[in-house]
Image (cartoon, rainbow, N blue to C red; front, side, top):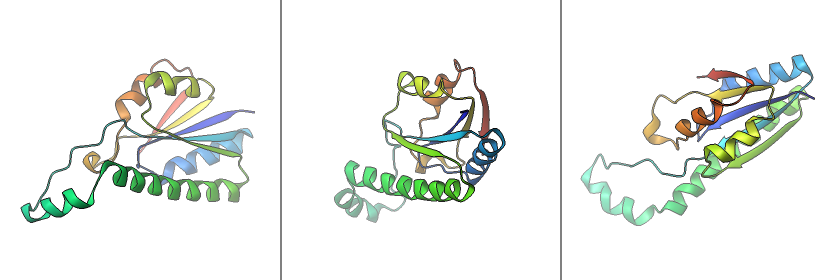
Length: 148
């Protein structure tokens, strides 16, 4: 069975990527593996209003932020499962935290086609793993489609 990998960059969830992957799987009779790649570093945040500083420092921790990120990704996974299920396409999902090039590459080498979310328009608000993704894709033989 042919395999397409949907490679989601952090919280970035372009709708066209699921559509493209599902269409490809229907055309080839293949399956989809969706990888949600988390960055190992949080983006630096600024405080636009000085009066927000005390409240933000008291209410936000790294674990709070990671919990919210995982809640968003879980919601995205449910949506993707619904789309694939409606189309009758087999789907496997994985969250890959603190992914390195060496962790991602073996997963990508199994693919016949890879759909990748391109860099989001507002990266400071998202968890970004794009440099690692690009490096891992450099040595993969599958065709790669970048989706905005």
